[in-house]
Image 1 (cartoon, one colour):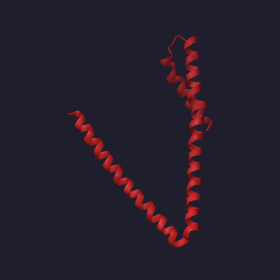
Image 2 (tube, one colour):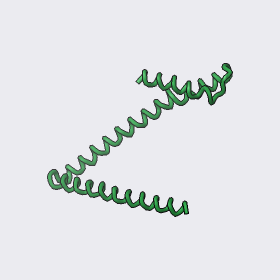
Image 3 (cartoon, helix red, strand yellow):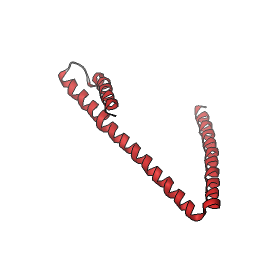
Image 4 (cartoon, one colour):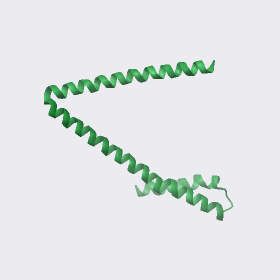
Length: 111
């Protein structure tokens, strides 16, 4: 009974995703037509280059943010919690939220 409900939910999700994809596809197609009509093939090439450059820029920003999070939040908080569990009477699991909070504040101040 529960499996049938999950299958129905998955099917409705897939149907809504298909409708959204069709919407985005029609927007992209109309945009391509507009660019071709007003600027020609060279304008379409320029639009592809601009979209690609913006995509690479956003990807580099996300990658930089992920590496900063690893460098200033995840690794220091785990190391501090591990070191603190040796010297303090608290466990690693009890110290990790505290050290993660301290490192998060440090990351916010640094940013």
